[in-house]
Image (cartoon, rainbow, N blue to C red; front, side, top):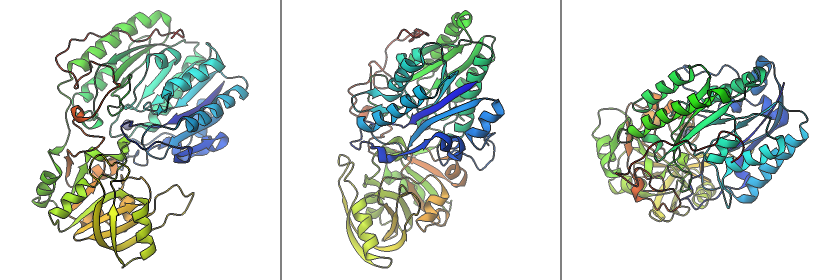
Length: 508
Ligand SMILES: [Zn+2]
């Protein structure tokens, strides 16, 4: 048995004016793809220190060997960080290389795709749909295609029609990327061995849910996922999956969705019945999605709570400008508030600003520098901030030149981590590279939504601040134009009944 492996993974927040070029992807080709350990931790924070979510394999090569399957590794491209839409030329180059690779791969029994699910491409919209359409055109109707997806993906009906199997992360914050890929591959191999012809039943649910109100260790996602487990144990059902969706994508197909995949045509009616029930259950919970952590209504409120806290360190998420959701990340609102309040001891992680970082590197450690900082990529939520501070630390990365250089500037009591390009701080070592030990400071402001597993485990207290930016948690403040209406919570009080959205064949 021979299976091709390929994919393009990216999460696009298209309110952001920052588009993504080819240089902002990490690309693995051929044997490199099979041997890379990164395939089993697509996010650096994907493995919890608690050891609960350890992947069974270190590499794709190991997994394929264990399954007794020959791999035809083509290409996987993973964007360095979530961002805006991918430039059309960049996407087409990657897609065409994948399609050519599959065409040249010789006999294939199946295709397994490694995707995120929220890829938007200039002039093309859903990148995953275009990719599956292009691959299906080459392999024909009889070669099954499986896909691994992040639960923050927005799927289209055409994607559902042209794909046979998909598996979706069941944890947010994410801890099961590796297991989800393993599940996709295992189900694909099983279907081929047993001669099954999977048939997905797919329902789009008109909900836009920020990831922070749909984490999986709490209700209602916990019960919905328990239900998924019950459905997939039923006879004739290959798998059941929930996509929370990606709310900050202004696209016609942005919404939550659910799928139940039948093992074959005979079990499709049962899958359709179950998927409707699952969709109805998710819709019925729409008012119950809520934050699983302490929330502050503003930056000021969060700072006041942290300063009064008994805990030695309080992590605050500047959630409105969250680059892990794809925002530019250079909104200076929170920094301005920390400085205005003369906060005695805080870390602000961080502000990407190439010009400002360069100035710090030129002046060197110990120098006093004045900067017009940030507010250049996102100029809509407050402009640059004039700051004067002392350069305390400079981090120059080695390697392939894709990692950010970071200057640490002390402005009053606030240490600002200034990077030469977009980045984020999701693990303790990300701070240590910048010469700061987060747990030795009173306030640590991170540009994140929920904290990633390692920080969540380490933080004595975590406050999510509802701040302005393109990842505003209050979706009604964002300028949606493309999303299909009505959709909750932009629209309220409308009736909805589940309808199967796809044809579970290849006609769409
Ligand atoms: Zn995600």
